[in-house]
Amino acid sequence: MIKLDEFIYFDDNELIERFKELISPNNERYYHNKTLNKEFQLIRRYLDNQGYRIAQFPNALHIPNTLYNFAYNQIRSYIQTKRNSLGTVTWDERRILIFGLDILKDDITLQPVPDDLQTIIRKISLRDATWEQQTDDEKLRTIAEVIENLMKLSNGKFLSVDESDFYGLFTEEQLKNFRKQLQVFRHSHKQALEERESEFDESRKKFLIHLGIVILIRLNEITKGAVHE
Image 1 (spheres, rainbow, N blue to C red):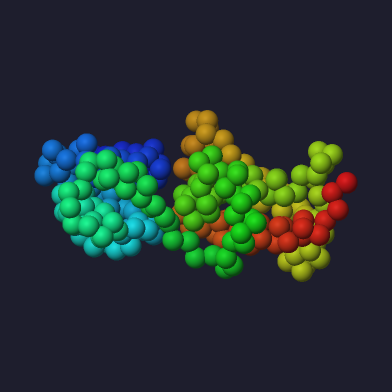
Image 2 (image 1 turned 30 degrees about the vertical axis):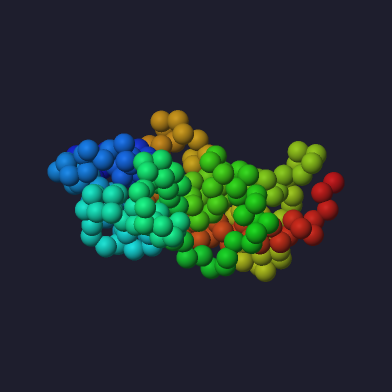
């Protein structure tokens, strides 16, 4: 759960959806409402502090702004610039842009995610999201799912990984233990959510994500040359 003063959200996804609701033209009559402006500012600062950015407005989360100025002035100006026309901007144009805003979390990984691995990640994602579009919890779930996808053979058994495949730095037993730690992110029942909250702080999540993407990239390289019998 994410608590920003009196405002509570289940996770980053819900918070991002709420951000889009606040700036929606359907909410235009309330753009000057003090409570909604406060919520807008809290969400903006939270997303900025968590490393998020809006692809279409790279600095919007980092620079202090009012709900009205961003949702009305900047959104309209962006649409006018894109279509190269200063005419009237319709509600539908604003709604389409806001719905399609790419709110991404900057993720500095040791290696870029290869295109073929991105394809697997998007297929496994519950919302067809790329690696960069996923929240930390989603990434940890994705890592667990993709490891299974890469290692599971057509006969139902799992590919045996030799320590030499990881240049002596990672054993098959350690890989099993890593997968076991991530199981809690594959479930959404109450016990799993409570365990995530109590056992996984931001530092641990970041460590597992960085380690996980290195493992995925290496497993992807290994399985390309593996014979699945």
